[in-house]
Image 1: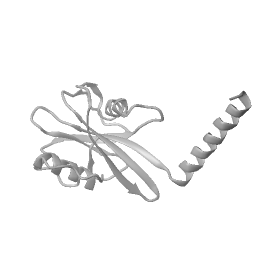
Image 2: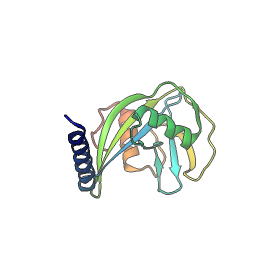
Image 3: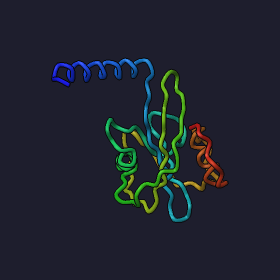
Length: 156
């Protein structure tokens, strides 16, 4: 294949992928069940969303999801050290016309230095079997599955 053909093939592919993203946008996110030695799970309260949530965020273009969750935990809770993130599952949710895929990780042996910041107002450790009021629906589902050792729903 000559250079002109390579150029056109590459650019037609780029246009196709760009049009596909506009027609069918997809977001990829990561969240974590950060567990302490007593089995409590770390929850955060964002400054821009109501309720208690699992920490996490978006995966940057080209970023491995396990690296993304470590980066998000560093940013959100001041993670300084932990065991390697362990993938629990992949979940899906639809938000308006956007598809959302979330990779959920278990993180243990976490050490962190939390400071309230522009994104995270506060954090707490909660017993999954007796969670606080005000959980997001997805967080409530994940904690119930953890507390009762049940198979996770595929939906976030």
